[in-house]
Image (tube, rainbow, N blue to C red):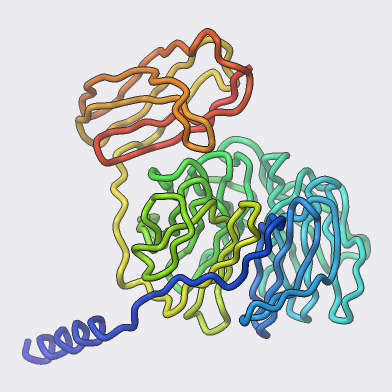
Length: 379
């Protein structure tokens, strides 16, 4: 018992002396629209621009050099030999830049590719097909390089970020909603986690027993445990550019995320047009905020919808609900309903505004201090 007491005192003392996690701006490059970012084990940093299609090499002191150009560049990765691969969303190609900085088409025939992942044996490449709602698999040792579909549809909805779990399964983040999937090497898909306070997710990395994921339209950075518990690492929930301690920092559409080889620094892109890249230094996972999961099994139908939707979900506690229809920039288009709901299954038929233009919206469900989002397509 005495030994346990001294161990606890030491642990608390160590935690109290941890240096503060600090968010700083590494680079602003107005006009650039940075997306995926990759930090190789050998130290190189690569970042791509979706609008211009450019691929860049970046240094930790903010120097940036163009090394390639594609058509709608989104995600990227590096193999064990140091070759950099990045996706061409608009053409369905994966481009390869070798260590001599020569660019070639590595694979074609994908469907709006985004995130890319290569296994430790450097044998299999996985690609998130954002437009195809699927995950492709490429045998890198094959004589002919071609993509086949590993998993598609169902829970996979606009996938972008990919990372391995400790057992070799793929963890796939959706950009079109806030669900995270686990995909086995055989292609079986199950729900892994939901980030209830964010309408969608950006790219994802893993450090030991935690996943780190950018909140995209929710201007926060989150961690997810191997058991699926979601916690907030950084951000105030308010869109902005404030640097400083992680809990007070502000982000604008944080999307790309990469981890330094030492594991103590995160680098982040923001999908805004000011070309901003941020660093989170002294990175640790001891000072995070648990995100309560009030909403479960949320389902909208039909989706796409024309004049009405059916909303069904499981509430983990009784709550006063406000259901808004909002645009991606956060502007409220209409408050669809307000009601008191009991714990358990909640189901409601909701009419959409008669003058609502066709397009993509978010259904925002607010229960006191909890917020949940689902994407809705209006026909």
